Length: 218
Image (cartoon, rainbow, N blue to C red; front, top):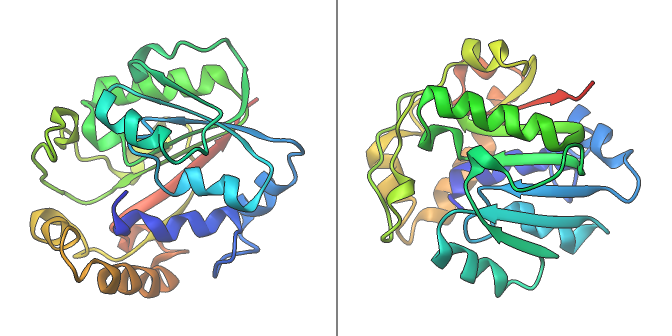
């Protein structure tokens, strides 16, 4: 998982700057919580929730090589290969449905369908993240699903019911050049820069490069 998106997991309240963040507080109040990580990839920081809490985590991804790597983490209680637009899970089967850095890999129509599927399976909260600036990206590491297909805006996320959100990074910390640098030895430095920038953009999403957005299920 790219260092660009790591800081927003501070919202889950684990050893981070935003330990008392609203989303973290809400999630931490859920006892014996379960999470389904939609488009889990190789198992990013969502998987690390299991290192800090008694959270039951399941994952789904369409790209088999990524699932094989996620399986080696020995964190997920179950991993499923499948399409995010047709989640093979029962209605209201999990407390939290999360999709990190996936919306930008879908068309607008499919992104709306993904959120609809996540809302169907979640009992408590739906959480998504994505860039809110233009960010061109081609397929990576032999994974054709890594190509960016759509540039989401804050207004469009709000139209899907995500009225609560915070910013990550700053505009300019995005794009093809930034993404290329994240795959080099200076990635940790860029991750630190993003974290420091998040202190500024956290409450001002309109100046951020990415957002974390969530909605409470009825």
